[in-house]
Image (cartoon, rainbow, N blue to C red):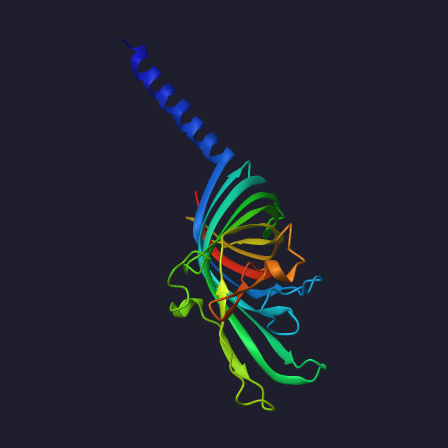
Amino acid sequence: MKLRPFLGVLGAAVLSSSSALAFDIVTIGAGAQFQAGAVGLMKPDDQTAPSPIGPEDYPGFAGLSLGGGGFVDVRFLHVVGIEFGVLHMTDRGAAEIKISDAVGNTISKFDVKLKQNALHMPLYLKGAIPTGVANIVGFVGPEFVVPLASCKADAADRFTNPDCAAEIVPDAQFPNATGNYGIRTKSSVLVSGGIGFEFKLPIPAVDIRIPFSIRVAGDPKPSEKRIEREFHEGGRVEYQTNWQLQGHANLGVGVYF
């Protein structure tokens, strides 16, 4: 009978030690993140265009990207882990379009501005090097991109959906330049990765960290054919908005347990 209190205390101590050990092995964090950077669509090598021939050339598109969301980070032994994030991103790109006559004279010139809202969902394998003040982190993995507007080729309302239209800004030389331009979207998977720092705030009662990183992402198989990025249908020219290259600065805040 006298052993029961002792066994109870021993059991509680073992459970407490096991729980502490588990938390020491696995650390789970969650928080918010904000991201800003640039996106680009490179000029394709093959400029073969569908009929009817539109602009004489498919240029490269480039612009800014901005958004934010949340993340969940599972860390093992404080040095290796997996992070999954969801970000609502607005990606914009612009290019100068020139239309020429049969002998090569420019008869119209204007800027076409593309805009796409999409969910970016990176899934990273992470590694960290503790340094005391801040952890050095590196990560790599796939990034799933799902456009929010239904501007696919089979979307019946894409010609009337304002989210599927491109903005045209005439050049001063050709102030009356007009045209019907739009975007065509589809989901994609990018190869993504980056490097950064993870600052732990000096608060004894809670583990709050400020991660900062530079991230890059790209399409591993970009098409070099204009005919696969530019479509002529219904009197409109549509550009595929699967951005080939992306670069962002990412800043967040997370609570770890």
